Structure formats: structure tokens, C-alpha cells
Figure 1: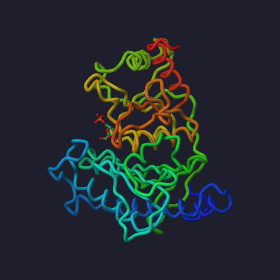
Figure 2 (figure 1 turned 90 degrees about the horizontal axis):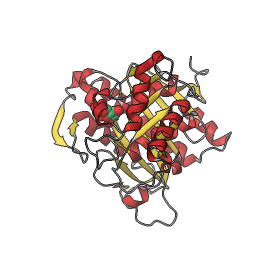
Figure 3 (figure 1 turned 45 degrees about the horizontal axis):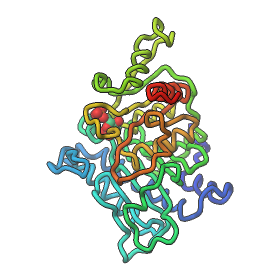
Figure 4 (figure 1 turned 120 degrees about the vertical axis):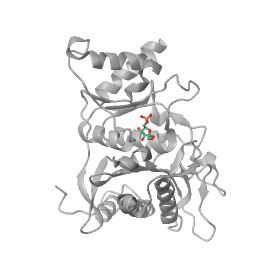
Length: 340
Ligand code: P6P
């Protein structure tokens, strides 16, 4: 049940004024991002009837086929956030380079990164997809913003969140003081608070991974999953359940809500690539949210939020969720490296 109808705007104002957690400029930025997500939600829900499904036949900077909705969602976020005066620049999964704020608009102190529509391979089959976003501060004294200014470790984030477009349109947000969940109230056309101070259970018996890649995994991942699959007759002594939506926002939302493990580890298909998911606008925001909810987020044995980025679109291995399970995975990786 929503908290006595506390809207996102009211909650953000309380975070600013009562708790001093955020400055007004960051509050206004988050409100802009939320308004953009509402527009994307409406566009996604009308896509089938408006002919906005399907691909454009082009590829994005990732070499992936671009869906119409990928580009629409990207444009909505750029247009909604470039005039507000809170940002110095934006970066998107759909853009090769950064999007500097046009000179006709005031420039602010924040950098916004986003995956405008994560999981878009699920669009045509009506499975939950979403927008993932991350906010950094522009380093002091920067006159001209360049991509290098985005290359900050995830622990520097001042805010992060995602919006799921599924049975409900849900906004999950952290400002560095816990995780809050909002749902889109269609009657008021606004986000209302559903819960705050989300806490991921330490223990879990549920893992999410694309099992078709099993033969390509590194030994520590194979060891962990084999033990889960062995169930009560194996070393874990209990049975496990498996989920895989193939939409990071959907899988991570389940982990935040009820615990579990989400994994997209390094695999030998492309040995030079750290992983499939992108560090700056997928792994880092999700890792920030999970840690703020009491979980853990590792890339092998290393904390994701401590990775020093070297490229705007660099990728990372991701293992996040219930801390007992992620600690075990981290130990298996350290043992494999001989550092445990
Ligand atoms: P696979 C979606 O394309 C995505 O980037 C994530 O949202 C999702 O977790 C992953 O890729 C799914 O990858 O290889 O299972 O299709």
C-alpha cells in the first residue's frame, strides 16, 4: 500500500529540506528524469498500437540492432534533461560520445548517464523492460566537459535508479541514503511512494543467470552454480530456484524486492571483454542500489563500485544481490586466484 500518498516530489523535497540529503538542483534533476520515464512508459505501452515496435535496421555504438523504442527513449531523456540547468552533459548507451548541454541552455554541476531502454530484445514479446540512470558530479574547475569526466568509479555516484515498464511502472531510487520504491499512479499520473529503506535478505536460494553460457564460464562461477544445481544432496544442502528474464531491470528488481543473486559473469565467448553489461550505466547504478539496500555487488573478486573506468562504454562482469551468496562467490574467485 502506498505511504499515505506521498508523491515523488514531496519525498524529494523532504530529502532536501528535512534530511539535507540532497541540494535542490539534484532534486529537480531527479524530477526531470522521472518525468521522462513517465513519457517513455506511455510510449512503450502504446508501441504496438502506434507501430513503434520493431527495429530501425541500424546498429548502436554497441553493435546491437537498434529498436525504434531505443531511439525514442533516448531522445525523450535527452530532450527532457538538457534545458533544466542541472546538467553539464549526458552519456547514453545509444550515443557513441557524450551529449554536452547546448550553449543556449544553462549548464549545471551534474553528469547524467543512462541506458534508455534496457532489455529491448524483450519489447516485441511484452516482457518488462526499463530505463537505468546514474548521476555523478562534474569535477571542479572543468570548463569544457569531455568523456573523461564521466570516467569516475561508481562509488562517486550521488544518485542512481531505474524505472521498470511492466505490469506496473515502478521507479526505484537511491540518493545515497537507502533505496525508495515509487509506483506510477495512473489516476494522478504521478509517482507515489510505495516503500523506502528497502533491505535485501542476506540469504537466498534463488539465482539468475543465462545457463546457456555455462560451458563458457570461469571455474569459480561454474563451481557456485554446480553447487546450487546439486541442491539438498550437494554441498549446499538445500535446493535452489532459478530465474532469467533477460531484462536486467526486471531481474535486479526481483533481487531488490525478495533477495537472490543476479549474475552476468565474464565468459570465454569474448575473452578480452570483461562482461556483457556496461559499467557506467548498468553495473554501477545497479551496484549502488544493491549496496544501499544492504546487498553486495562484485565483478569477480572486486567491488564493482571500486572499478576505475577507462572507457564510456566499457563492460564489466556483474554478480549482485544477497550478501551471503555474493560473499561466497567472491571467496570462490579469490580462492581461484590464490589470494584467499
Ligand atoms: P542475454 C538486455 O539485452 C541485457 O543488456 C540485460 O538487460 C540482460 O540482463 C542481458 O542483456 C541479457 O543477456 O545474453 O541473456 O540475452
